[in-house]
Amino acid sequence: MAALVTVSISRPTVTEDRIRIMARTTISRIKKIKDEHFQISPEIDFGPDIDTPIDGLTSIFVHLSYLQLRLRVPPAQHLQQVQVDLETLLSTLEGLAISQGCPLPNPETPVHKEETAFPITSNYLYLLELQRYLEKLCLNMDKLKCCKDTDVAETFVI
Image (cartoon, rainbow, N blue to C red; front, top):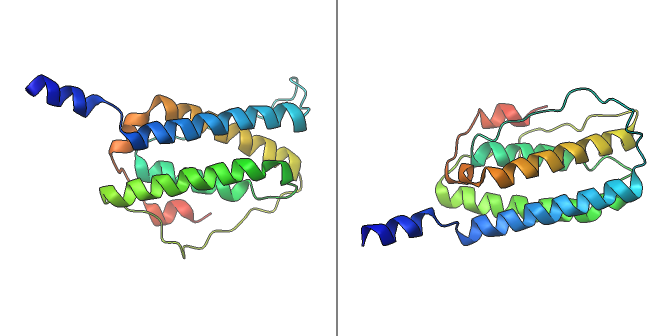
């Protein structure tokens, strides 16, 4: 009987599977958008990759919310499906966080969109960051089982 319980606990939940599928779908769309809309020379160096840690459900929600805001910088018509995918993923993560009692940022927390002189480059860089973060999330699905908040209110103020 104990072996049966152990096996059922270690299996991914429906929510984890759903989150993984949504993340992988979004990654596929990002790759297609990069190929179709961004003709970036491989010789261009954008600096070191941003390695945002995946600490727990709260930090995942906060960072994906940050990236969602950043991807709204025009021109973003070709990013609409990724934005919808990200919104759906965030909604699922929010429901999971609430069910686990994890702290989430206050919706009224002031967030300021950075003004950028190079919106196309910014969109490309945030797409790259989103793709890498979602790839890392798929490898760290166990982090969805803990909250790990890192100063939720402060993290959201930019």
